Amino acid sequence: MPKNFVPSKSTIAESTPGCVAYLPPAPRSIRKGSTLGDLLDVTAIECLAHNITLVYPKFDGESFRRAALVGLKPLAILQRGQHLARALRDHLPNRYEDAVKTLLLSLTPPMTQTADLGLAVFFYLPHVSFVATYGLNPDHNDGRDPFEVSLRAQYELTRRFSAEFSMRPFLIKWPERTLAKLHEWTRDPDPHVRRLCSESARPRLPWAMRIPSFVKDPTPVLPILEALKSDPDLYVRRSVANHIGDIAKDHPRIAFEICERWLVGASSERKWMIRHAVRHPAKKGVAAAIRLRNLAA
Image 1 (cartoon, rainbow, N blue to C red):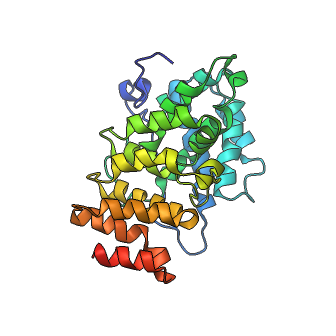
Image 2 (image 1 turned 135 degrees about the vertical axis):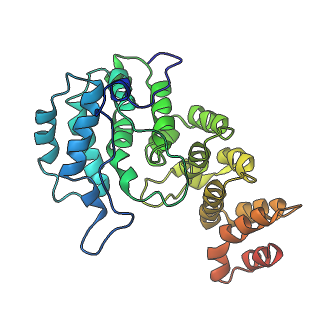
């Protein structure tokens, strides 16, 4: 990928009337009788083929649709994302960097809000699954280090969905390199990117693989939380609070010491974050957590 490459909507989509990348229709919340897996159905597969064909005319949409539908029905949402990533691998350019460039060119514009996002963004689960599955091994990239390509891809994808799941294999394989990039992104103007810095590194992120080294010792991530503790966006601060809550499950002393320090000169926004961070141990009657909640009231 060129060094200064900044993907957006497909140039074909922008220059050809009626030919635009789009997201498939989706409800704002799961309806009775439906599952999250239903979001990645025949309609989503058709949309995926359409968006990619706009930027990669060699894409064999019919072959992709057939491969995508084989064995799809019994799969849950995360499994569907992985299944569609495998189908994409067989139909995109062979070199990982070229395949990722194609996927990024097919994206719709970044999100402009952090609330009421609905469920349509789950359309990008196969994209982040693709990066997590094929973006760690140089063998998929003609022997070239795929790290920068993969991190740039996740930067763009988190602005449309979230890369919190796909970042975790990188934090496990390359913790220092990945944390350095996340620390750089704590200064990014996009709140979706800043939130990723905290959310992707949570040691016990729900639905996701744990990061054993951070469960054992969370200190490498603390500078990132420090950088985000006064973030102007609640979307980011809530992630920081939940991250501290994760730490409190294994290292309550560290979590409580952080909250104690952050109480000094705390704004009302930071006080809310502290109360949120220790809410679970406080409910269990942990005296230190109850004390912190009272001080942050």
